[in-house]
Length: 264
Image 1: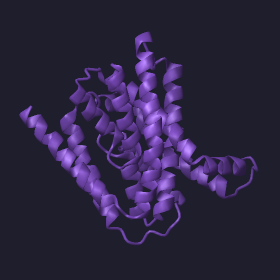
Image 2 (image 1 turned 30 degrees about the vertical axis):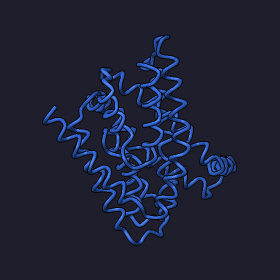
Image 3 (image 1 turned 135 degrees about the horizontal axis):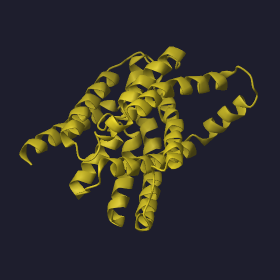
Image 4 (image 1 turned 60 degrees about the horizontal axis):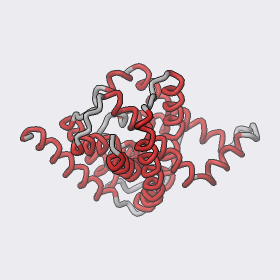
């Protein structure tokens, strides 16, 4: 993988991780356009590395909230921070179960499956359209709601289904306050990504050749910086109920991807 290609993929990941347009789907499309011939396992590994970069950008943006949560937990009381972390843990369970039981099957969807990515982008477009039309959004994230949002996150492991789009849309459709929905959506993925990195490192699944270190580092930095910008931007957009524009965008890209597969 070349240096320029790695930087481009990093920027795409950083922007699309937080914007509801599917980072994994866009990475697959851009890889295909750039002629990346990585096998599915290599493609997924690089995707995980870039997700790690955006996870760090999430921690930077929400550093005050994360510090407050950790501070509350170390009080060892059943307080608001305890309940928030419990909801985060519950939201992780569906993705963890599916990720462990169907890891090989999930890997098969990566690596140039443009028709599938296009179809899933249309699903994302529909979710965003429904969420944009939701009116009553003033509730807190409940224990039951966290499980439902977690199911959306598990489905979003497929390339083309936007994780932020699916989880925020599900939250809004459940009547959850848009600001709290965005905050929960961005924070709930951090433990999953860090856990995935730890699992792959311990299992020896992530291995880089010496010539890949510089491109990977450049892609990581690009994703981190782009993620800082996109995260703050997305929080503002969710508050202002501007999801319809992303719905249209996903629909257009999805149709183009599907059409291309029939004429390529």
